[in-house]
Amino acid sequence: MKEFIYRHLGHIHKTDGTILIVTIWIVLVLAGLALVFARSIRVAAIVGANHVASLEAECIASGATEYVLAKLATSTEEETSVLMESKPYKAMQLGKGYFWVLRSNLEDEREFDYGLTDEAGKINLNSASEEMLLRLPGMTAELAASIIDWRDEDSEISPGGAEDEYYLLLSQPYNCKNSPLETVNEILLIKGASEDILYGEDTNLNSILDDHENDGDLRDPPDNRNGRLDSGFYDYVTVYSMEINLDNEGNQRININDVQARADLQSELQKIVKEERALEIMSLVPTRPSYTNVIDFYFSTGLKSEEFSQIVDRLTTSDEETFPGLVNVNTAPKAVLLCLPGLEESDVEALLSRRNSDQGLDSIAWVAEVLNREKAVAVGSYITTRSFQYSADIVSVSGNGRAYKRCKTVFDMRQEKPKVVYWKSMTHFGWPLNRQIVATLREGQTLTDTIINMN
Ligand SMILES: [Ca+2]
Ligand SMILES: [Ca+2]
Ligand SMILES: [Ca+2]
Ligand SMILES: [Ca+2]
Image (cartoon, rainbow, N blue to C red; front, side, top):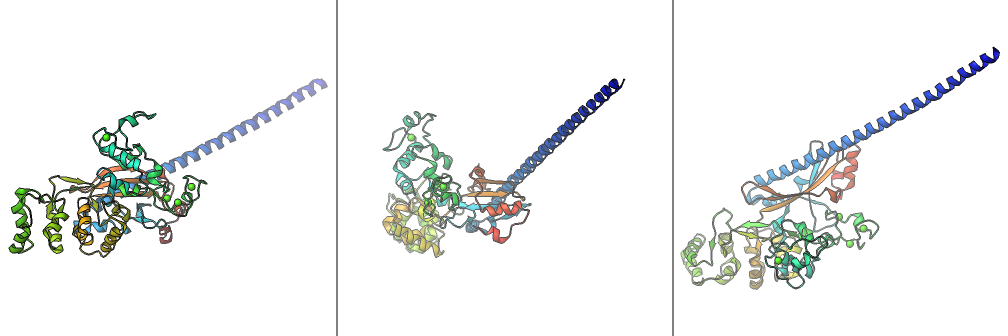
């Protein structure tokens, strides 16, 4: 009996132990599950919050695009310089977030610049001559020749260039385009082109010498660690600049090479000078004129500078409806002016110093005053003082600093209502502004002027 009781008790104890262990396991498993759930809910919450932040940044970027469109739509002819001002494009608050319109500062690689970029202040890859392309910083003879072959209709290979024969033998073959480039980045498809040539050391395209762009091979990109930003020609080229061959009022111009237009030219002259003077000028116009451009007309007829500046907008030497790629001499940076045919460093310096005086720049007449006859006529067919296309490098950030977006948008103002002709996400190039901005927002603080102005 005793034995039986002991055995039974023993059995009871054993069962208790098992229950305890099972209970502990169940508790452990439940606790584990709770932890797993908590974690996955936390992850889901973070993912959700990040998604919301990402949408917020996207909305701010769209808002910024509308803002630029509205600015362009309400600007008048005289106000185009206002468009270039940086103030309205720096840390603009929209909802809880912010946006910037970043502009490459070609003067100083340590300071950010903001505002719209004038596409007419660049060299147009579709209309520039090989000689002009060759003058771009970092351009190679091979690439310049290949750009010409890429855009010309024929299949004749120019020296150093490439047509179908080259492109069809690539491991991923494609045809030579034989028509104009539609985007600047299309250049990367052309023989001899590379991101290295196009962007140089400025791989995040902010025109600032960032730490990783000046540390040699330590971090990407490889750079020469010389303390200077050796950038490519990306900032100096476009495919968008295009102007209409109408005067500032939208009227048809007088083609001074058209024999039929003599009477029109004379009456136009009489609007600005006395009849006697008009006849004097007309006596110098040959019966079959063939002026290279309006600057050629200016020198050939001995017009006075003030006469020329009053009439130049009314004149043309071409029946073409549009001119692709005219360079706006009022906005083009030095490197672009240096690409104009026949100009030397000293000519460009003279142009820049005259331009800085900011007087009488409303027509190309001022260029004819600064350069000698030969040089002025040589550049006369490539220049303008008007711009119809602007681009905006928009950077937006959510109010909590958790997400940002960057996009490049090109606006065309040839019609009454400006329109977007190009849009591309640039977010993959990374956050281009000072990191302190994002860090501050992440800490839940608002941006102070000190942080906004940090470079
Ligand atoms: Ca071709
Ligand atoms: Ca950079
Ligand atoms: Ca590096
Ligand atoms: Ca460098």
